[in-house]
Amino acid sequence: MENSKHSDGYIVRDPGLQRNILAVLITGGIMASVDSTIVILAFPDMVKSLGSNFASMIWVILSYMLVVALLTTQLGRLGDIYGRGKMFNLGFLGFTIGSALCGAAPDVIFLIASRVVQGVGGALMQANTGAIIADTFPPEKRGRVYGLNGIGWSTGSVLGIILGGVITTFLGWRYIFYINLPIGAIALYLGYRYLKDETHARTSIDWRGMIALGAILLLFSYGAMDTVISGITSFNVGLMVLALLLIPVFILIEKRVKFPTIDIAEFRNRYLASSMFSNFFFSLGFLAVSFMVIMYLQGVRGLSPLNASLLLVPSYVILAISAPQMGKLGDRIGHSIVATAGLLVMVLGVAVYATIGAATPLYFIIIGSMITGVGASMYFPSNNTAIMNNVRQEFRGSASGLMRTIGNVGAMCSFVVALAIASNSIPREEAFQIFLGTSNLSGDISTVFVTGLHAALITSAVMLFIAAVLSHARGKERAL
Image (cartoon, rainbow, N blue to C red):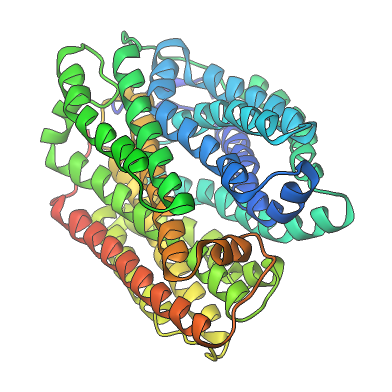
């Protein structure tokens, strides 16, 4: 069947071609999400092999998150200008090259720089995935397709958890990056064969806004991480204050440029603004939960990083199985309803986690993991569809990138907050050793740590509840 343009703006394609395109996108999701969990499990070996320490090695994670948070909106705009398929494939190439460099890293500085290369590739893929789906599938099918695409991310996270310990133990940490090379080669071939570009938009890159946003994120994250590592000092407080003072400057820049990094005017649309901010608070609350539960399992219960992570696998499995059906449910009864209900289910799951103590049966963790998995499977496809259905076809790349940027900023802040809480409830060095999987707690210090985790988990539940309120506040379902 010939491709033709629908009134909504999507390209009507042959079903076989649609399946091939989705397969490429899912492969990209698997590739990127594997490294999000596999790196954490390899931390102890990387620190030992490279002769590094926690303070330096933490930037192996944060550098990737910073780059992705900063670039997703602008790289989505590149997709609007030059073609989303081209930019997605370029992201695959960059991520694959970055993976090869990470595996060959002779020291931690080279590894961090290589993670930046990976981050650019990951941002290109993330920024254009949602728009390619919206270009390829009609509105009534997008919820299910976003759910199917979510399988890539959840499957990759599971593979990262399982393969991280196995590969690090039997082959060495460098192979957690080398595993991306054959995947990337196959995906590049398929991407260049099936991803074609039919639409382009007149837009441009907002260099000043991107630099200002980058300065804000870098200053704040560096200041916050220095607070975690060194305690509160005039230096790190000054960095964070400077970051906050730059926010009005950034907003002023965005109001004056024709194609801003974050279009302030778009947030006058209550439906879109509520969806985007709901995404931010979801990310702010959710990433910290998994990290804190793993800290508890390692530090209080004495489990290895691999065994601790395996208890969270049910969440990812349920997400992979349920997301397509939940997306289809959103297509039928309304995505706002399903997304809001999903967030409330996640609040319940976090509440289960908040009951854990020093001797709580481990099946409580599995129950909490299953509940949060159900909630996430409801939220992800429905909120993504609600956003993409609410923007014009020619700006879907920008909207997809903005959605990822806001979510990634929330995720980065969540990670920093989790570290700050963990390191302030007990001596910092002890917390760092727990994170590296080389120490566990006992006696009174274990009780103190659990009390701190309860406060942090309740905070996460509040963030998720705020996300639910914003999701509900978007009002009546609409589509352009």
